[in-house]
Amino acid sequence: MNPYVLAILLSSLGLGTTLTFASSHWLLAWMGLEINTLAIIPLMAQHHHPRAVEATTKYFLTQATAAAMIMFASTTNAWITGEWDMNNMSNPLASTMIIIALALKIGLAPMHFWMPEVLQGLDLLTGLILSTWQKLAPFALIIQMAQTVDPMLLTALGMMSTLIGGWGGLNQTQLRKILAYSSIAHMGWMIIILQYAPQLTLLALGTYIFMTSAAFLTLKTSSATKINTLAMVWSKSPILTTTTALVLLSLGGLPPLTGFMPKWLILQELAKQNLPITATIMALAALLSLYFYLRLCYAMTLTISPNMTNSITPWRTQTTQSSLPLTVSTTVALGLLPMTPAILMLAT
Image (cartoon, rainbow, N blue to C red):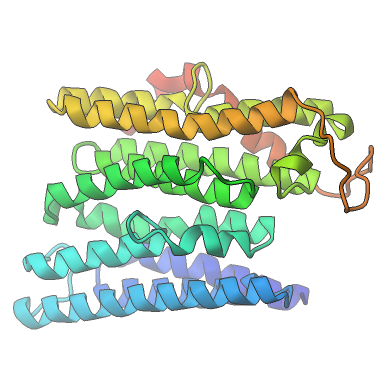
C-alpha cells in the first residue's frame, strides 16, 4: 500500500476514535464511529485475497447495522427528550438499543458471530488493530451509558460472552479464531464489572490490549497462523517460544502474570457486591479459556510437529521486523502483577 494512503488511513482511524472520546453529542459520536469503520476497511481489503474481501464485507455489514441502530436510537431519544446529549438518556428503549448496537460493534455474545470469521480472513497486523484499537471508541460510549442501562442486561451480556468465548475456542485449530474467542471472553469480563467499578473495566481493557498485542506480534514474528505451525517455532526461536507460552498463560489469567490482576480484582469486587454466584460462574468460565491457552502452550513447548509444512522452512531466518513493540508488550503482559497496589491507587 502507498505510504501516503496508509498514513491518511491510520490518522483517520485515530481521528475517528478521538472524536468519539471527546464527544458528548450522539451525532458527533456516531460520526467518529463511522470514520473509524471507513478508515479500517481499506486496510482490511488491502491484500485483494478472496478471504480478506469476504471478511471486509462481513465487517462492513455488521458495523453499518450497528451504526444504523445507534443513529435510530439516539434520534428516538432526541425526539422524546428534545436533547442529543449522551448524559440525558431517559428513554429505556433507546438506551437498551444503543447498548445492543455497541455490543454488536465490539463483538459481545450473542452478537459475536462475525468476529471469528472476520479475524480469520485478515492478516495479523490488521487483526491486531481490529482486536485492540477498534474496541476503544465503542467502549468509551458503553462506559458513559452504563448507568442508564438495566444492570441485568449488562450482567447477561458479560456472562454469556465469557462462557461463549471460552466454549467456542475449545475446538479451534486456527490461531486467529482462538484469539477472536479470547477477545470475546475478555470483553465479557470488562462488561460484567462495568456497573460496579468502571475503573476495573479500564484496567482490564488496558491489560487485555497489551496481552493481545504481545500475542499477535509474536505470531507475526514467527509467521504462525495454525497450531501445527506453532509446534515448529521452538527450533527457530527458543526464547520467543518461552515468552509466548508465558503470554498465553497471562491471557488465561494465571498468577504471577499480569493477566491475573484484572480477573482477581473483578472477582473480588463481585464478591463485595454480594454476587457470589456470578463470581463463581465467571471463575469457572475462565477455566474454559485457560484450557485452550494451555493447549497452545502444550503444542508450542512439549511437542515436535510430525508433519511437514508446505510453507518455506522457517529455519533460523533473520527477521526484518522491529522487535521493540513485541518486547514492550511482552514485558507489560508478563510483569505488572507486583504493581497492583500502585495501579489500584492510581485508578481509584
